[in-house]
Amino acid sequence: MRTQSGNTARVVVIGAGMAGARLAARVPGVTVIGEEEHAPYNRVLLAEVLAGRYEPDVIALPPAEVRRGVRVVRIDRADRLVHCDDGSVIGYERLVLATGSNPVLPPLRGLGHMLPDGVHPFRTLDDCLALRAAVRPGVRAVVIGGGLLGVSAARALAECGAQVVLAQQGEHLMERQLDAESAGLLQRHLESLGVEVHTECRVRGLRCTDGAIPAVRAVELADGYELEAEITVLACGVRPRTGLAQAAGLDVRKGVVVDDELRTSDPYIHAVGDCAEHRGTVYGLAGAALEQADVLAGVLAGESARYEGTRALTRLTLRSPAAVPVAAGVAGAPGGLDLAAFGDSRPMPGDDVIRLADATRGAYRTVVVRGDRLAGGVLFGDLAAVGTLARTWQDDEPLPADMSLLHLLTNDGGF
Image: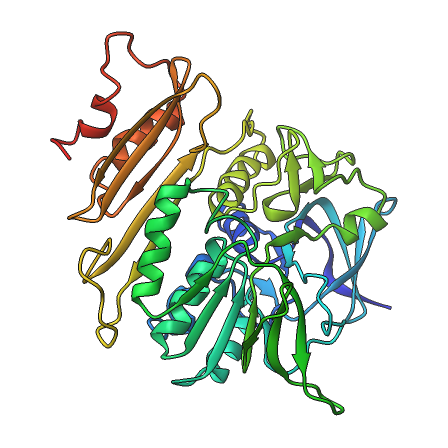
């Protein structure tokens, strides 16, 4: 058995994603172990790489010392050791799980453990580069999943000249962030780029060629209709990677359970990022992962840092390629679309809803007020008020009793 030089590290981080890299940048002498061969990168910008707007080196994070291409296979909590697939064994004083998440592979007919040729997840830089190599003008591509990732992938594929169909099982796009009206504006924008959008559309299976390496040829819908597909992108969400934690006997529910110091059920092991569950919530968001890493850096430095949860703002920019004509009156034309969403934009009984829409400019704003606090909102096309609204929501302070609710949407100088 081979042991890494130095034998025991003060802090070992399993995972070289955004959370692991952020922690390495904040804590001196951290040993980071990463499965990917690439240096740490900004996963949020993968769609820009797919579209050809950025090269992979542009999305690289600040340099960090990472043992690349190494997978941890077992955690020995009794002796505080991690065993790696290259035969090395590394001791730790504190261990941090930053193992991230895996793409959800839906239970589709024709989709086994080995993905057919032409079927692509969209989670890692390798996934992105493989997809970019497969795309060519005119290729028929079906994106399964209409969340933030699916929308971003569909836009990027359209920019590459693909004939794109986006299949969303839910009632509208980006259900977690948008209300029906703003989702409709988003759909119209995608359609203006040439993306064919199907909502309330359940995918049943894949039709593939026969042979040793089957290749996808069509996506089968529950109603029997088939969408021709040379490329199929799976954007059906993610699931926390908890296998190592479970095998080590840590408390795992949806994710690896942590307290306000990001500490697991083992006092010498912490967890951050997509794999961590804090107060019953798995965030799966880059902003939360970075915030958790910053708090943990303080904890490891002996500070009285505490993680209270993340109130995250989702922003999305969809540019309109010059080669694609954009319909008049579509939000963001001709330069593209800007969208921001925060909190809960779906009103509950008793909530106040304030909504402003300008069809000519393709602009839309809505906020939900619950009691005396801002619960959430969506801004579409015109983001002039987003800074003020986001700060009001993030501060979670009572709104002034004498404030006009309309003022929430017009305090930037008017709509």
